[in-house]
Amino acid sequence: MEKQPDKVRSGKTFIALMIVGLLIFGCIPQGSLKPDARSSPPPKIELFEANPPSVAEGGTSTLRWRTRNATSVHLTGVGVVSANGMKQVTVGQQGKYVLTATNSQGKSVTASRNIKAVPLMGRTPPGQRPPANGPVINNPQRVDRPQVNRPAPRPIRSNPSILRAAVATKPLPAPALLSPKNGARFNKFPRRTTLRWRPVKGASKYGVEIDCYNCCKAKRWCTDVNKIYKKADSLSGTTYTFNFAGAQPGRWRVWALDGKGRPGKASAWQRFTYTR
Image (cartoon, helix red, strand yellow):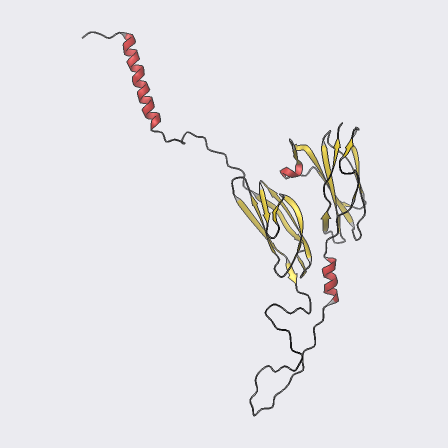
């Protein structure tokens, strides 16, 4: 038999290897070569509290919450809310509130708080009739026995102390911010900044929070990524001085605390910018 040249044999060998390779890789299911997608971290609810935990029926309580790794946060009776915040709610007969935090993959976690509603004195509970003004006969009497009439119950009056307690639980209003004005711009260094606000009647102390843009993450506020740039609690006066981070935007807000340390409504964010 005539021998084939080496080039012909090597060419046939190459073609045979190509066919074997196509057969092997063709048997591998599509998608098995794809890398596993990294899952997002699970959402967490780090804080969900009600202050005060019990109020007179129709009174108000302040809900405060803080979450992590959540792209959507929902509060029953309110709707979609921010990842961290507070909300004043009016409590009726039912005071159960559920907070649901969901991440980008649809995983959810919930937390609930029950705010006890104390009925006001003199209010007839649902499903019961008010007492009659005339005599009350508990059981029917036999004809041959004399009927015994019991005196009508005394009318129930509202307790003024409970009414005063319901008014006292109302959170303090937000302080009016004086300076720096919203949108103020500063071109100075060092960036020593003094915040001023009006006093609130009934406040014993104040709390301040300063937020910074680009400090915790590029093109984001620190509160957007569940972080706090600067916070001061238990301030006895109506001013606060601090050194700001850099030539970038910032914002601030203030709330009052009553004699029991309960926080009132927080003011809206007020922005300022350093250009130097």
